[in-house]
Length: 124
Image (cartoon, rainbow, N blue to C red; front, side, top):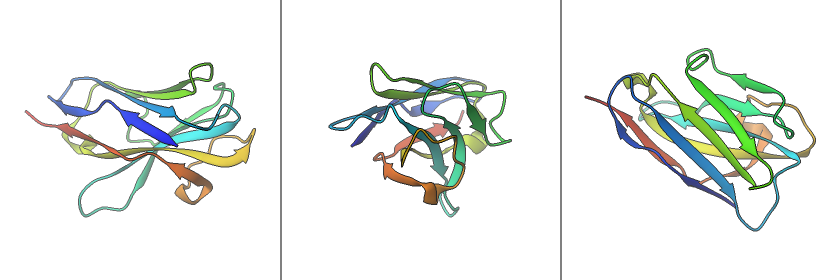
């Protein structure tokens, strides 16, 4: 249901933008989020946005560098990543909650739908 694009290799300090498009289902009334998982580590919360886009939440490690947004008319969510660091290297996943008109969610267990993942590598 969720198709991701973007990602790739970027130098430290660079920028990337990830997209997450819903296919076959409308997620405009669902909170959505981004998670990431580095090799040998557990999946961790990155950012979340409520159904209308007015409320957002970020992990402390990305606050001020990453921006989550959504365009409900296009059924698409984005993650703009600036000032990237090597420690941002991970597989990134987008996700959508099942509950309608909910607020932001930081726990992975609150998300029912997941994208296929996309690799982000920050290296010189």
